Image (cartoon, rainbow, N blue to C red; front, side, top):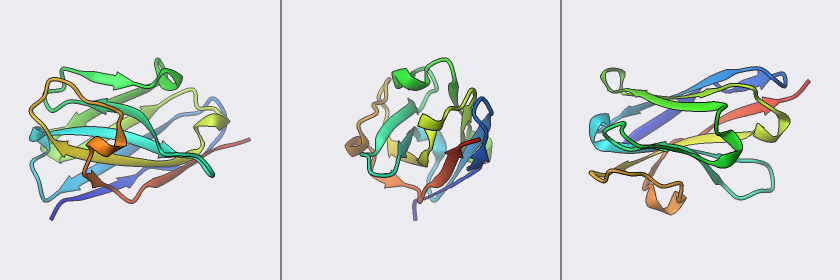
Length: 126
């Protein structure tokens, strides 16, 4: 059974950092593209970052470029999202998502990912 479990969320002050983790089970992470999405209260779920199965291609939405970094450790079945220089607009529930894909790219279209975690809440506030 495919399962994704996020962790690492919490309360952080503006300018601070957090590292989110997504531990996967039930599939071989090596063969999957992974995405991070977020949903703020009252807003649509939006794509934040994704990485293709070979780690050759990584994509970030404009609002997080230069601040967030996606990475993975296939041996630990874990994907990370390092978030720096956080601001209140980053407050949201963050989700990881997975898709078995041999493609050389990934997309921030949430409909492209069939497998989702339950989310971890990030609050940026002073």
